[in-house]
Amino acid sequence: TAGHVDHGKSTLVKALTGMEPDRLVEEQRRGLTIDLGFAWADLPRSGPTGRPDRDQETVAFVDLPGHERFVGTMLAGAGAVDLALFVVAADEGWMPQSTEHLDILDLLGVSRGLVALTKADTVDDETIEVAIELVREQLDRTAMAAVDIIPVSAVTGDGLNRLVEALLDVLRTAPPPEDRGRPRLWVDRAFSVKGAGTVVTGTLGGGPLRLGDELTVMPGRRGGRIRGLQALKAAVTEVAAGSRVAVNLSGIDRGEVRRGDALGRAGQWHGVETLEAAVRALPGQPIGRRGAWHLHAGSGERLVRVYPLRGAAVTGEGFVRVELDRALALTAGDRFVLREAGREATAGGGLVLDSDPPRRVRGSAQRRERVEQLAARRAALDAGDRHALLGLHVRERGAAPLAHAAAAIGLSLDAAARIAKNLGLVDLGPAVADPAAAERWAGGVLAALAAHHATHPLDRAAPRDVAVRAAEAAGCPAPLSAPLLDRLIAEDRIVPEHGTVSGVRTPEHAVRLDPQQAAARQALLAAVGREPFAPPALSAATERAGAPPALVRELEASGALVRLGPDLAVTAGTLDLAVERLREAVAAEGPLTAARAKEVLGTTRKFALPLLEELDRRGRTRRRGDLREIVG
Image (cartoon, rainbow, N blue to C red):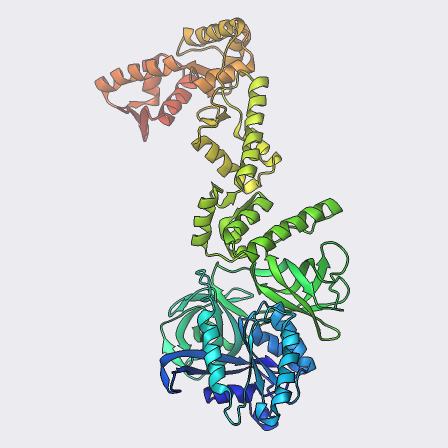
């Protein structure tokens, strides 16, 4: 319930529910709501004869204080509801706090509800008609223009049945609370119960809660578990979105949670310290860089700085960047109210468009581009299209970690994964990428490999670092360069090369030797293989054969030449010959020592040891202590 102070909100709630919403002794003594009040009832729908039938609805009320000094408290209760019972007294009519409360509801996007014209028993019919006309004029400027206005008296009971009927109609025609599998409970009360521990209450949105769920208090990372659940004082094992709920928490002390915090599943929510939003300024209340502002969202309140993206203060509608003094659990689609800190006046409100915005843009061209991006986000949110929103979020960044993107736009990770697949986003392991961006990065890699092949025709492959640097130069975030290359390999767009020289190449690349290079290759292999177990120094053989270093690398990459040391190499045939000779000796004598292997091969210790170690590395011999045996 919302409306001006002393217009009978609490009295009406008591008449409807039989419960006193004013919990505090001071409230009851003064007849003034100071804090949030709570009440509920099973409201019956009257049948044709006026007798209640079985058709009834459980309705919970959050009674909001109406005095101007308690608007902050009012906002803590209004932030998590989407139906309003707006109260205007027939004898006083429209008052200043009526205007502010209606503005707040409108800024929060509340469009469904009713107006109860209270104290109808204290005025005549003509006064009631005039009051209805004045209220309708005020409603017509808001999203609540179509709601019914019903005169009632909480004292005599006149109009209460009609009010209940209308209220039930509103509830039945309202869309069900959205379940995104991502619950968030804005805390409006926190207290301790002897023998139970910490209990918090609030209005649940985003998804269900169940006994045993692990929750995190946000902001911060304090974790706990649901020990008990109550909905309207009844113990339950699960509560659905849209419910008023009390949660008994284990693992969280009373001092670690307070009004304005939010409870959610760990990993599904991130504390937001900077956001970008669409805002609407109330008439005569420009929203700009000057001064400090209070942002109210859910039951939370933060001191913030506001930076209009077009530079000038917003009068009417515009886009802004908001920096919070402390983190708040927000996501795209959340609504908020801005109040000027100095005058404590409601100036406007807005819709969170990006809860994880990029760094502040500089320059008019970048600002225009960012405004266009935010306008597209606004259109997607207005249409309820989270598919489009995920696509926009990833496209703006090129790529984004899927879990982080899901939290930023208000989706569960499973839902985000399904949408990402439907949108054709590119899976890069820890993140998803926009297809156009991923193709741009891939193009950079392929171009770099082609350039390397052109300048190093004897290299079987380019070093992997060449491809990594090319991806990053094309805009690929550094953590995604390796997954990008892995994807290109899986798609056969690049080919990995393993062995002595590892790297990647394009599928069409192959080493092609000209006649001079082919002759040098043949001469080098002949020189190294002429005396297989007493080869010449590689540098000398290379010089005599006229083989350039690139050709030596190619011979190593192809496996034709096997390097045993900095200046020592053998041909692949030498390894095969060594294994055959050692196999014959092992068959006759059993496992061999290194000294005996040296004798069998007729070579020196300087050559035998690196040769045996290479055979061990290739798995063709196996060392057991000082002995070696042939494998296979």
